[in-house]
Length: 249
Length: 259
Ligand SMILES: Nc1ncnc2c1ncn2[C@@H]1O[C@H](COP(=O)(O)OP(=O)(O)OP(=O)(O)O)[C@@H](O)[C@H]1O
Ligand SMILES: [Mg+2]
Image 1 (cartoon, chains in turn orange, purple):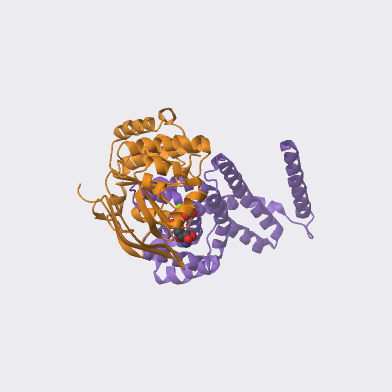
Image 2 (cartoon, rainbow over the protein chains, first blue to last red):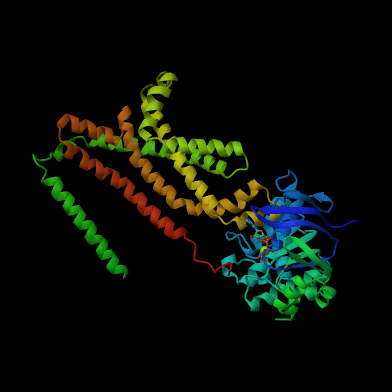
């Protein structure tokens, strides 16, 4: 595909008097792993949620694979099926097993046969290290295991783009590692990812590019090593100092 | 503790029954329960009618209420507003008034008697009761759907599921269990509410008790057995509801978010 995978122009969103997005332009190329960092309330989640139409912007456009993303549009389900999303709170379906969570969308949306979906689902659970927990219910899994199931669930739709909104913020330090390992593998395998994270080590080491969002704008944007090594703005310098400059935790 | 609880419960129920029995037997002027016993066949057929009407009304109420409850969470503003209107009108007026309007205005105007004959009152009454219950069922369904975390919708929609697929395959399976206890409660209300159909001449169980009371002037002999008959139906329902609730309450899960 020529051109960017994600193309965002002039994105604005206000909540009452609060400006969440204040004119965001962004292109993401296929294969890029983009980390989004920044202070709380900077608009990171809102930006991510606009990319798959969970939030409708007040102004501006989002295109993924050249298709406009519009919340409520007739083709929104087809567009969303190509975009995976992983949430901070997992949002696994509690009435389904781990495998059921992974196979639901392939069966319903892509019309896969139960056999085919199960086979792929088991392979995906294997890939995130949970091959032996296929029959477990979400409430029988630890936080880290749940998040890995959620990642497998997103991967099951073979998305061209994966969105992560603070995927490890609800996890213990011990289980954070197992989720980050899975994400690191994904990043290496060439999956296009946008990752909102407070894990500075992950942003610095595993992403190809980092955005610093502040006050609803992309305040800084550059290759991750350079951005962390030489922050240009005082705001980013202060932010990195507060978060220990991305020193490994 | 369990044993103690049981002893207390039995003691309180026994005391209540003793009090009621004492009152029932020491009625001034004396109550002649033999009169009620003589009419046991009528009471029995009335109870059957009560149960039949309650069943029919419950089926209709679940249908209407299910549809209205789903309409409340649909994306169509028309469906939503139609459901709101239905629920508000029905819940904002007494059932007795609805029944009078349905029977004396609507059914008369539509000349239902010609079509339904002697069953007219019972059928109109059951339909009225179903419409009434439906409004409450709709609120139960809506509340259950809204009780499901927004994140479930977002996760399902982000996978490409449509609104309808999300509702059917993700949301409803999670909230059906939450609806069971309040729906059982609604069934209990419905059985009791059906006593009002006696005012339009439906020969359900209250109707026969009223007839006995006005024929014999012995209100105790008429209404105390009546109360016992209603309890015989509603207490098992309540018990069933509690059993179901205990069975369906999911084991507490690990906290999902910390923050
Ligand atoms: N649904 C909402 N209703 C009202 N205000 C909202 C809503 N969602 C976000 N906001 C506001 O928009 C601003 C940006 O929020 P957003 O969640 O995008 O920030 P964030 O960068 O993800 O922050 P955090 O690191 O805390 O997750 C904040 O001021 C927030 O309070
Ligand atoms: Mg956020």
